[in-house]
Length: 466
Ligand code: UD1
Ligand code: CA
Image: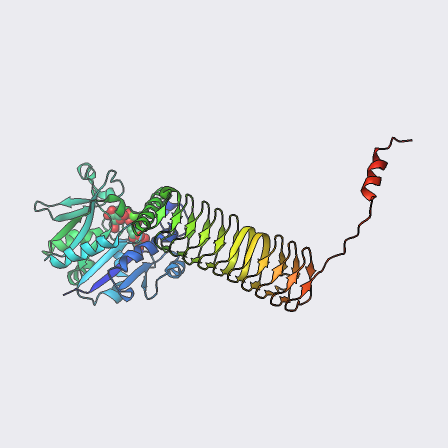
């Protein structure tokens, strides 16, 4: 039978070594906060209502930063140590039977599989708990694992309290604990702040539980990088690199070609379909979703975009909030500033900017245009240099262009404006009034030709001065 699991995540500290006014768990790696990365792993083993985050520093911002719904919170008003932080979650957690999983909030690299393994072995064992341990190159700053003769954990010694011999130990406590809930809550009050920092150390629970006859077992995890705790911005950059490499690897294994995986930046929530190719230096941010068989060119930066299948994004496209439908192509050097819906088979070319615009199926704007607050129907052609004048200094106004309209090059469309189906706008026009279906609208000065004028001028300038 699967046991009940309560997760408590410790996230109340400021994190002095970050040298920041922002709480440590709010710092970002790979496009998400440290805390959200920890929560993503926790949610693989527990329902949100069984997860409690202990907040303290910038409690309100930390709560708001959580992107998953249903997560519980407890407040630690004063940061008196990791055991004290767990006690702050007692109201939600103490009545639970089963297992109590406690995670430091500053370990964004922790994998869901490791938590599953931990719960498995803690559940099977007749012990007071199982703690993840790992062997690191440089153990400084970490609590050291003191093993007993039988291979169980006898104690965790914090750096400040460790003897010179204990400091040599490279097996450390990464802050991933699974205790049996009942004895834990029964004896937690026995933790005393009898250390140089005057803090209530969660790590003291090992010796306390042992004294009451509960063994504490280790679960040694090979990959130390997974257990890196973030204390400085240097470690944050390391975590960022590892998370991004992991994301790229996961995508490649699911069928995405990434030409230079070390050069791309893909946020945690991004999804990409098989046979899509990413050229070097692509950045996919936020909740971007890309379908199958797309091609994304060098230097493209896409944030919160939804891209269907068989879409081509040429190099250096910068888009935010764009929906790009099947078989469409955009770029190079195009920009979607705020939201656009680009229809099936449509073509947006170089130096075209779209803002809050629906661009119909099969329509084309191949070069140098600004289309803002507009809707363009299907199979329309927007000539080079077309500008929708959407702002009159006070209000934003809409331009509506119906199906199969032809807008000649360098047209100025002064909104609010409607151009009806099949109409034709002569190149170089300034259009201020509605254009009816199938009409030709010309809004420009007529051309005046003066025969021989140029020759006469040349002769005049080249004649010697008198
Ligand atoms: C802790 C462990 C140490 C371990 C290391 C792993 C203790 C006493 N020591 O040390 O054995 O090797 O993590 O990274 O637990 N927090 C609170 N309230 C507090 C204090 C801390 O919520 O009063 C939170 C912090 O926000 C952080 C986590 O607990 O997310 C760990 O705190 P931190 O101060 O980083 O502990 P370490 O000194 O790294
Ligand atoms: Ca830490």
